[in-house]
Length: 101
Image (tube, one colour):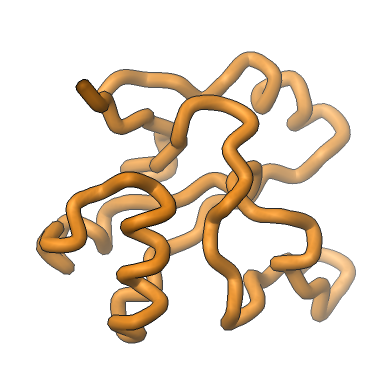
């Protein structure tokens, strides 16, 4: 793992809220889609996945609902499919990139 929360994402914090989302560990079919999309091993242990977060930059605007003025939620159908930067996965709210050979 190497740090990679992009400078562009950090600069965008001034005018855009960046949120971090947990893996859908209680939904096996959707979890598999997330792992494939993020190029992670589909056999990654659940206890490891519970420590990871996916940055909102990896989702399209249509993947979100806005139930309240200060709330942003992912739709149940959301799968990370937007990769403006190298694939970003965040551990304990610190953005990290998986390193792939």
